[in-house]
Image (cartoon, rainbow, N blue to C red; front, side, top):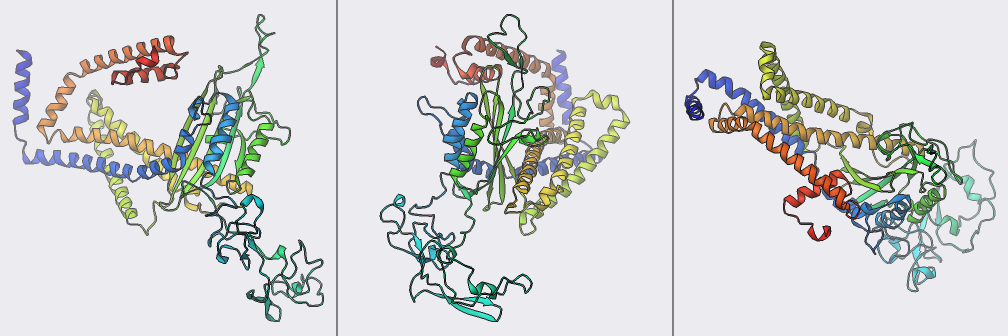
Length: 576
């Protein structure tokens, strides 16, 4: 009877129409909360998550799904130990990275009008595909290119084009015909070299007797343009980095087993994302090369032994570099964790993607492989794009709504803070304030950072400066990843706050909220029972099947497997 009368009383209370003044006081906070929530939602959408996902599918997913062993099939998640990490780098990472790169001698794509070939390179079909004054020969390539391949060769004969060279006394015409095809047809400094206009009078070399400007094979070509390593046709791989953390081994103090097991690890597993000076071996090592531990560098700035990869170099050069690391004991039992990072850039959408493949080894020889992808856009404030002005409007709305919300909540809290925190929505409001403040400060940190304001392509040719640029971009990518997560969580909290504010305008919605609050303790009890049962069955799965099935080899994975089975995915045949 009491429950029935309470419901009738609640319905009668909700049915009473509010006065115009009360209606106005309720509409403005609700409307402001909805605008605030929608602004955060639009800002979340403008982070271009869908574009980043497409880049991931085109450029990164191949490294995850491609096997480094076929029988049985093993991918990156099946890697066990440092030896298989090297095998994955050799058979998957490098092969997939350079799969779309044209190689010298290929029938298509290597010699083009945009990237003309140099002397002796091919396969070329027309003179425009050869650099400078070189011309296409006929079946003159090395035998490894094939018997019908055509390579670029010097022009010979009077029909070769003439060029104009600026000399001290003016321009001089020179024929580009090569009269001597020997390896080096100029035994001394040519006489016309001193007459070039680039020389200053103080630095000009001795003037030999002027002679005809003849072209020799070593002077008929120049380096071709920067091709760039393209992955998935349109995603350029800018640079890579390998970060190594080594285990610190200590003497096994057990009097019973020390003879059979002289050294042990100081910790259960290696965390590639944090620095532990007591557990990491930071001593300099190496035989062919010496490697020094770099504090505050490497993956996530956690400190590591760092090796940069210049991905503008050919595949065999990078393979030789990684092989040298293996000879210097980068892939032995001392490897605690290894992180491989690559920067991709897609000019069609002006988006940079930072991909990291991390391998962390534990005490039992198991390896946890994880893939992290973080997008970075440097053109969010490009005034040439219409969406930039939409973003500016969102900034203004969010700031105004945030200030108004803080003012309102501060007044309510100062009026009666005990009553304010006695309601669950009080904690929601405080959480929303903290998250919004964090998002705003984090975003200002991103857009006003030196890297965000000054980064441009191409990267510096200086190795040390390139390494510093990579470090800055990787740090910015991780900050952007944190920002995207924070915006998503904040959007959920702000929407919860907006729904609560609109209950004063929609009695039916308020009835739903009140109903949920009444049965809240029963929902909490159900969730507690469900979590306890899922954890219990998950722990049982670890004990029964953890040694045989990867789905049950740890408690978190076992609980997720149990939840999947509850949802209808059977694992019966795998278990038995």
